[in-house]
Image 1: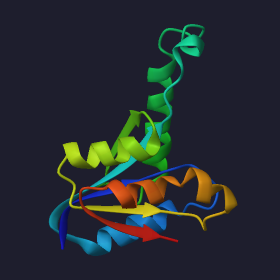
Image 2: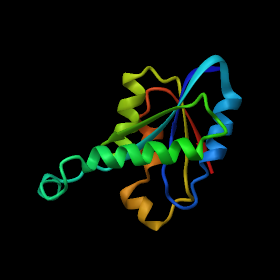
Image 3: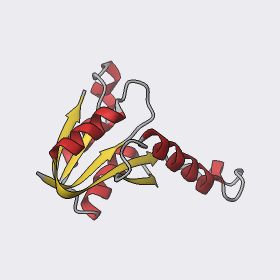
Length: 135
C-alpha cells in the first residue's frame, strides 16, 4: 500500500476525478496522505502586466474552492493548486514531496498526442515513483 499519493486534477471534459480519487483511496495504506493537485498554466509576463494585482491569487482561491466542493465527499484529501507547465510541475511536485504513487486520469490518445504528447504520458515517462493511469 502507498503512503503518499498524488492525484493530478484537470477540469477537462472526459477526466474522471472521482474515479481517480476512488482508486487512490483503494490503494492507500493506513494513515496515507492523498493530495489532489491542480496546475494552472503560468501567464506570460506580457499578459500578466495587464491583469489586476491579485488576479492570480484570486484564481487560485477560486480553483481551491471548486476542488473542495468537487471533493466534498472526501474531506481528508489535501488540495494544492500551483502554477506551471502541467507535466513538469506534477513530476516536480512528486519529487519534492516524496510521493510514492501518482494516480492520473488520461484520455484516449488522439493524433495530436503522437506529436505533442499528453500530460499523463509525460508523467509516466518522468515520474520518480509508480504511476497508475485511469481511463
